[in-house]
Image 1 (cartoon, each protein chain N blue to C red):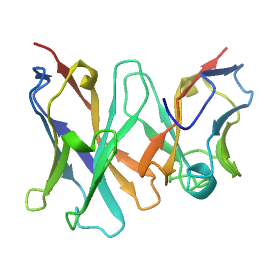
Image 2 (image 1 turned 90 degrees about the vertical axis):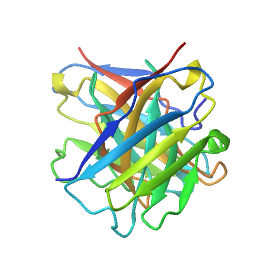
Image 3 (image 1 turned 180 degrees about the horizontal axis):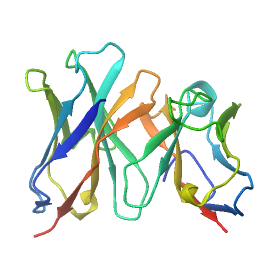
Image 4 (image 1 turned 60 degrees about the horizontal axis):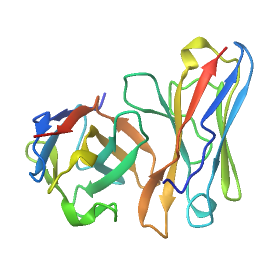
Length: 110
Length: 119
C-alpha cells in the first residue's frame, strides 16, 4: 500500500478541467518536493511537473501543479482525448527513506 | 537527447537472480546532482522505486527490497545494472531504468522491459 493516496479515477468532457489530488503526510509531501507523471497506455511514465509546480520544457501550460501542507494537486485544463492516461504523484518519504509513488489516477475523457 | 535502454533475459526462474542492464546514450553519466536507478511496475499495478546509484558509486535502496538488491555501474561502458536475488512471481513486472534529480524528479525513463518469473 502506498503512503500517497490518489483517487482511482476522474473524468470530464473535452475542454473541461480536472484536478487530481495526492494526499500524504509530514514525512513525505509535507517536507519534500512533489513531481507528477503521465503514463499513456503501454508506454513509460513521463514527467509533467517537478519540484511541486515546475513544468519541463515541452509540457504545455494546460498542466499545473500545486502543494499545500501534506497534499498536492495536479490540474489539467482544456482536457483532450490524448490526455487519457494514468497519472502518478511522487515524492521522497523521510520516514521510509524511500522515493514513493502515489496509487495512481486514471483520467477518462467523456 | 539522453536515452536509456534496458536489456535483460525476459524470463527468470523462481529463486534465481534477476539481472538487468541499462545503457545510457546521448549524455554524461558523471553529471552532478543526477542519480540513476530502477523503477518497476507489476502488470496492471502502480510504480515502485527499487533503488538508485550516483556516479561516485554511492547507492541507496528501497528498504522493502534492500536485502535482495544490488545496483552497480560501469562508467566506462556508460551502463548501470540491477541484480535482484531470490525472485518470486511477485517480482514479475516491467522494469524501467531512470535518471532522477536530487529533488526526486524522475526526468528520464527507458522504454521498460518485462521480466517474468516463472518455472
